[in-house]
Image 1 (cartoon, rainbow, N blue to C red):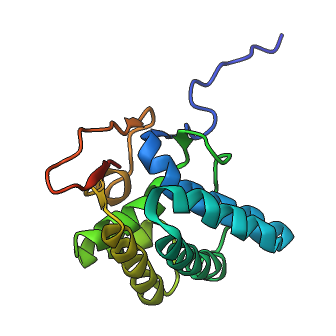
Image 2 (image 1 turned 30 degrees about the vertical axis):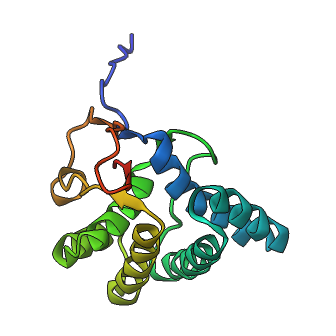
Length: 183
């Protein structure tokens, strides 16, 4: 008689990230660009710019999408595996998405050591050009009135615990007319 044994962690548990609605707008840029890379549909870029323009203005949207497109192509070239994305509009994100947003957030706060750690966690082979692109995007976001919070480095400094769930909460807007986007 063969006895079956249940192994509680037969496969690696996943990590769930719950983005705030404001953060979804940011990660959706890269999710949509992933679709663009699959089909090379220029109309998809126009739709992405139109959606983003409702939040940040037309000129800022064009600049953000342009820089994000370069960053997305760089990620595809400089990573051994493709970035895992959730569907557009989903608040539930992947660990890759969190690390990408962490890269943007760290550059927003001029913490280039943390940005380098986020890039390393993303398995980026040559990170410096992509960190520079992330910095350009974060400057454009800042100029359009969006504020990014510092990322939680526990998700890429150490191995996260097997049952980690990260919920990204939305906080009230701060003084000075900046809209708060928490990660």
